[in-house]
Structure formats: C-alpha cells, structure tokens
Length: 239
Length: 286
Image 1 (cartoon, rainbow over the protein chains, first blue to last red):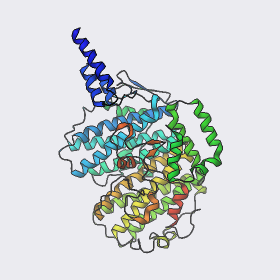
Image 2 (cartoon, rainbow over the protein chains, first blue to last red):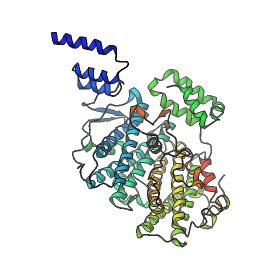
Image 3 (spheres, rainbow over the protein chains, first blue to last red):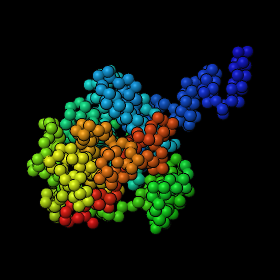
Image 4 (cartoon, rainbow over the protein chains, first blue to last red):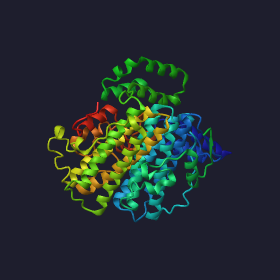
C-alpha cells in the first residue's frame, strides 16, 4: 500500500509535465505498470486506435466501406510482410533488391495508413498475420511470397473495382493497383527476368493470356487464398 | 480536416479550381448538403466525389468512346513495337530484351483485337503503321529521330508510351463505373503497368540511370529526366490523395518520395489525346 501511494505521487508529478515531455509520459506509463495495450496506444500517439482483434473482423460488402475495408485488410497483410522483409532482408539480396524492398514496404504502409485514415471509425481492426510458411532468411522464399502477394493484390483490386460506387474511390483504387502491378512485375523479374507479365502463369488468378488480360478475382476467392497468411477470422457478408 | 485549406492547396497548382467548381454549383450543393448528414470519418469519401465532379470527364463521354479511345492507343502501341521488331535497325543487346518487346507487342495486339471485337461495327477504322510518326518530329524535332535505329531512344519512347497508357486507362475508369467492361479495362490497365515496370528496368539498365520500376518523385512529376515527355508525367509528384497527405501519414516514416511513388496518377482523356496526337500524322484525335 505504501508502495502504491508512492507510485501515485509519482504519477501526479509526472502528469503535470506530460505536455512538455512526451518521452516521460511513456516511461511514466511503464513505471506505473500500465497494460501493454495502453502503452501501445500511447506509442501510436493516443489516437483512438482499434485494439488488435482476435475474434474476427467483418467485411460488409453492402457499400463502398466494405470494399475499402477489404483493400485495407489486404494492405495490412502486404505491409506486415514487407516490414518483416525490410527489417531483416535475406543475406542473398543485392543492394538494389534491399533498397527496392524498402520502397515497397513504405508503399504498402502508405496504402494501409491511407485506408485507415479514410475509413476512420468505419475501419476494421488490425489483423494478426501468420507468415510461418515463409522462410525470411531465404531470398527464394521471400521473392516467391512477394510475387504471390503482388499478383494476388492486382487480381483483388481488378476484381473489386466494379463494386465501387464512389467515383473518387474508384480512381484511387486504380491509382493503387497500377503500383501493385509495377511491384509484381519487378518481383517476377527478380525471380526470372522476362516474366513480368507472364499472363499464362496467372490463369488461376483469372488472367486471360489470349486476350492480354491480367488477373481478376472476386473477394471470396482472394480471401480464400490469402487465408493462409491471416490468423484473424475474416467474415464476409453481403457479397 | 479543413476543406478551405484543401481548396487553397489545390488553388496553388490549379488556379481555376474555384471556376471548375462553380459552374457545377449542384456538385458543391450536393456536397454541403451531404456534409450535414455524414460523419467526419466519411468526409474524405465525400471529398473524393466532389473533386471527381469538379474534374468530371467530358471527353470521351460514353462507353463506346472510351473503348475507341483505348483501341486507338493500343493501335499506336502495337504498331510502335511491331515496327521496332520487324522493320527497324535496332540492335537488341540480348535475347531477353528482344523477347520482352515481343511479349509486350503481343499483348498490345491482343488488346487491339479484344477491343475491336467488343466494339464490332462501332470500332474506329483500323490505324496502320503509316498513320504514325513515332519520332514525333513535328513536336520534338530530331530528339527521337533515331527511335528505330537506336535501342536507347526506342526504350525512352516505349517507357513514355506505357506510362501514358497506364494513366489513360485510369482516367477513363469513372465512365465505366459499375459495368462489367470496367473489369476488362482494369485487367488491361494493370498489364500496361507491368509493361511500364519492365521497360523502366530495361531503360535503367541500358542508359545506366537510376530509374525505378515505379514513378518516383520529381518536382515536375517527370522522373525520367527526358524533358520531351514532361506531359506524360505531369502531376505524378502529387502526394495528396482525397485530401489526405500521404507523406508522413499517421506518424509513419513515409517520405515525399514514397508518397509520390505509391499512388500513380491519372490523365484526362484530353491530356492523353494531346500526347497521342504528337505521334499521329493524320486522323488526329479530337
């Protein structure tokens, strides 16, 4: 009890200087034994961030918010993957590959954060990922996974565009998907130069080589493929 | 979020923003009426709609016009690559470079045939090789005079064509909104983006420049350093999407360069036609 009072006193002292010392506030919370969730909130700048969801998220495709949340989910997945790659790239990566994986990481982070901000309170929570099938020390494994993510991302945006009712968001989806396609082409060329647009290899994703068409998949098919990388249960309604 | 600030920011790069908005008072009125009902969270969504109305597409105006516009661009691209492969003195440095251009040529031909078939009797009269001047001499003088004898010049023009194509399809998406044909257009659009990515790598390798597969930040939008193609990249320096600044978004380390790279920009139909007409000798697009 005495100990607790000491802590409370300390809290009072530190509270008063919160405005001039951000770092101190963080250490205060740790000192006060605050839960990890609260520390995480503080680190994120005290925004009303949603906590990590463990019981599942729901994508309701009845309107554009469902489509945007679907994109947000995929961007979360991609960003998480590239953050892990960029933080410890396979030793076999060249300097250019390391640099470009850094670029791609920030592109996906930007996409993720854009959707989060645009959706505001309508945004789904953060997804838990499962990358146990990827060997992050192996260039071959990382490149194969990157190709899978990018080709799938392209097919996902191509297939979901027709669902968007808002013209502004349709254009934005177009602004993102071409960047994903640039990523996909570059990653493919790293695996095998010249395969940047090997549409015949993309038929499982809905590509049509004879007509020069890239992949396109409906959300249920995309989520079924992406499922192996996601721990959080994703419920789909009104598709 | 302050809408007045957003409009002021736009005014810096587009002095006519208020004029663009005012003839469409209905759009503004709609927006403000909606604004009373929607939550702050949904504001960027509504903003996107308002700006789209302000910059509304007028040319091309309908599905067939869009498809014919796309078909014309595909003719231009197909004949360009086909000329390089079958009727030029370009020395391709590797088997792979020749194979890549062949792959791209074949896709452009597939797109021509697909669009032609979809349009049927409504399709434009086919463009032939002789309809084009791929050096763009009337506008560029001798800058690209050796486009079919110099591999590097060829790559410069090819990269500009692909990046233009990506922007062109993106700009037409609103006309096709909600229609099955939109999906087809998007499937072509991302193939063009894959081409652009590869051509940029080929250009970087051949010219020994640090051109990335994605369009990077440059003050005037043009990261290629080839001033003749400035119009192809106009606006690519943008980092503001639907009123949201992407640089440093939500406290992340996203730089201005990343922000410009991670969203490609669209071009209006009229801007694309101006670019295409540089290479079209007769039957210019209007």
